[in-house]
Image (cartoon, rainbow, N blue to C red; front, side, top):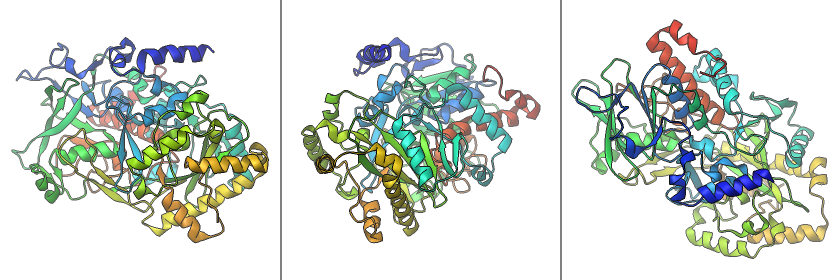
Length: 594
C-alpha cells in the first residue's frame, strides 16, 4: 500500500508533460544540467579561443555511455551529452508496473522513441539518460566466456567490470508463480540442467539477475554516474548532437568537437582539448551511432552525396550488417489473474533459441482498455497482422476492438522464444538530414532459412512447455472458459497459438507472420569494417564508437549486462593506456565502486 501511494504521488508529479521537466528530482546529481545551461556555465574549461573544451566528449548517455563517463572522469574532464531527459523523476521509467506505458508513449518527450523498420515491425529506441536500461524488461545476464574470447576482451577485466555493475544496480529476483512454472516446465521438457540463480551464460535453465529491486523500482545505468568524480564530469540532458566536427587539413580527418542543440533549439559547440589522447566517443546505440556518422560525413559516398553531405571519410560499411534478434511469442490465458513479472527465467538451448516469459498486467482493471496502440507491451507488442500490414489503420482497428474486450481476456502471460544468432541482416540508411527523425532501418527478419528453422524449433519447445505438468496445473480451466478466452483474444490479436504445430510449413509461416522485436538490435559499426579492435574509427583520429553498434552478435540472452560492462571495461582500458598500466590498475573494484 505504501508503494502504491508513493507511485500515485510520483505519477501526479511527473507523468504530465511539462511538469516532469520542472521537477527538481530529475537532476539527482549536481553535475547533471539541462543543455541550455552550457553557454552560461562557469565550470567549463576553456581553450585558448575561449570555447569550452574537454578531454573526452561522449555522445550518448545510455547503457554504455554512463559507465564509460563515470570511469573516465576519475582522471580526466568528461562532457556527456544525452538527447533525452533523466529517468529519476519519471514514474513510467522507475516502476515495473509502468513498463508498458513508456514503450507505448510516442510523445516527443517520451523516454522511448518509436520507429517502424521497413520490414513492418514496430520497435523502440531509448531517449533518456540511462538508455535502454530505462525502458527494457530488466533482465541481467552476462555473455558467455566464448563470446568474450571471440571479441578479444581481457577475461579478468571483463569479470571485474561486470562486478562493478552488479554491486551497484543488480538484484536477485523473487520468482512469482508464472516464473516458477516456466522454470519447472523448461527442466521437464529437457532444457537442463537447472543451474539455479546465476549471472553466467550456461546451457540449461537458470534464474538471472534483474535491475528491478524487491519493491519493483528500476535501477538504471544512470545510477552508475554516482561513481563518477563530480569535479570532472559534466552531463547535459536534452542535448541533441547534430554532427561531429573534423579537422580535414591533414592526411587523416581528426575529430575536434561536436555541434549540439539544447532543449530550446539553440546551437552550441563543444571541443576537445588540444592534448594527446583526447577523444570523442560515440555511445549512441546501434541506431544512433551509425546515423550520426552518416550525418557527419562518414559512410558510403553515393548515399552521402545524394543528401548533399560533404564526404569526410568514405566507408561503405557504415550502417551495414544491422541485425535484430527475431522474437515470437504465445499468449497463454489463465482462469485467474496472474502476478506481474518480466523476464526472470531463461532456457538456454543448444539449438540457438532462448526461451523466456512474462506475465500479468501492472495497472488497474480499467486501464487494460487504455489506448496503448498496437505496440503495447501488455499484449506482447505484437499482433496477428503480418508485418507489412501493420499500418496505422490497423492500429486504430485494434484500439477499437480492445475497448470491447473483457478484462479476463488479458489474464495470463507470454512465453517468448528468441533466435540467438540471426544470420539475416539489413542496414541503416538516411531518410533525411534531420537527426531527430529516425533513419530507414531494415533487418530482413527470417530472410535466412537457418533463422526460420531455429524459430520452428523454439515454437515446438513452447508447445511441449504448454503440455508439461507445471503449466497444465497453472492454466487449468474448463473447456467452455478456454474457448471463450481464445475467441475473444483473437479479436485483440492476443492469442497466437498456431493451429497446426505438426506442420513445419505452417510453423515457418507463423514465425514470419508473427515476428516482433525484443529490442536487441545491433551492428552498423562493426569491428574490422568501421572500427578497429579497440573501437577507434578506421581512417580517422580522435574518434571511437563504444556501444552495441560494434557487435556482430547480441551477447548472452539479453545484452544490457554486457553493454554496461563494455562501457566500464573500455573506460578502464583507455585510462590504463593513457596513464600507464600501474596507475590504471588502481581502478580495480573498491568498496566505494570507483
